[in-house]
Length: 241
Image (cartoon, rainbow, N blue to C red; front, side):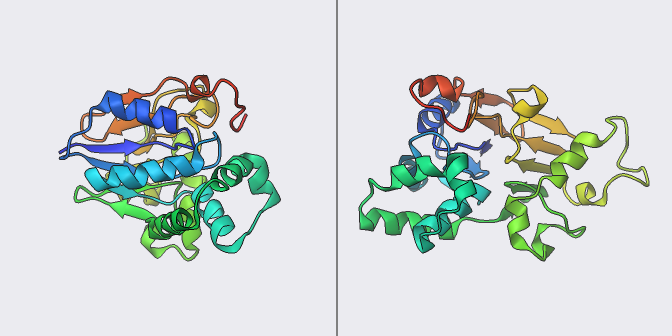
């Protein structure tokens, strides 16, 4: 069985389909989606509908991203945060205007069912963003930090690559898990377009919402499959640029 981690999608359904075709999924595979299914390109509700159908055939774990929580607030509470609308929310709002009330209820249930984090039997952690508690995400006083935090990634990026886990100054948070897989902060900010590792943290957000591709990584082999740069699949749209 392959464990395949899927990076941030941001309404780029064409990129998701393209990357999945290149993976050539089997029914033995486990797909872990790190969240941010919405807010970006135009196919936001369509992406969630696709994932609901995909999960009927394949084993899936869906994690919660900050943009998923924002869309949930809009669908459930009609909460239209101006900052959300300006950062991809308008595309989601427009997309969801097309759904029936029955479909909306299904999507609300999907957002409510999302997991904040997942730890596998090899002590690998999967979550959207990060955590601040020294005992792990399960002890986070503010649970929404796991899909908003950027300090974990910033800390991993700041470490000297030569520093050992045995060093007294090595961050305790990173010692809790063998590997940590996140999204949330596009690696394109570091000039990269493939998933990258800093310390034991793998970032699989390769900027699909902006100018990058959508990526899928096998956590055991570290094989990577990617779509074309997602913006090229939506040539008449601006995305989150």
